[in-house]
Image (cartoon, rainbow, N blue to C red; front, side):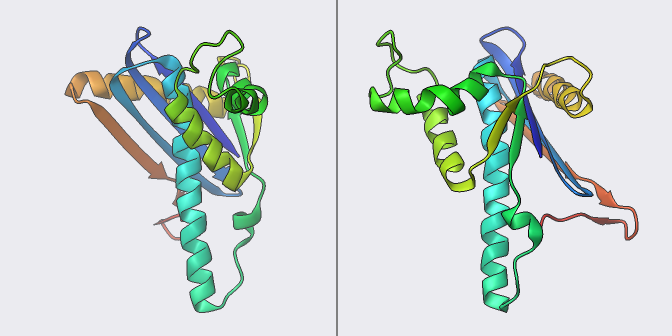
Length: 185
């Protein structure tokens, strides 16, 4: 299960993205931002960052299991569910993208699809990982959506304090039994 969010202070302006990933007791969160971006780019970046991380882990674990001749862990084949409060992301990937591609990345109004670079990246990741997208209402009390929103704000704050072109952070929940980081492998 993955929750994502993105946002900007001004649009365009400094923006942040975040995701939270859960599988059983495993928990991971990551966030980052850019000085000059848009809300929609940050919403897309959150999903792309989560799926890119997951794909890298799956590929690494798959290769390791093949080398060691051991079975894959259960999480490798588990369904991926993406929860987003962005109808732009949810509808774009679930309803609009096939038509955009058929029309040469043009909208029904014959305008160039905005953020095509990110949509193409997301399309490739979705083809490989086949996630299901679900819309969740923002600011409605869902703890993981609220946490993502907080991390987006934190990313923008850190970005403005550093006056750097980009920031990136990640963390994984500690395993309380061993005090070791929980790994997705």
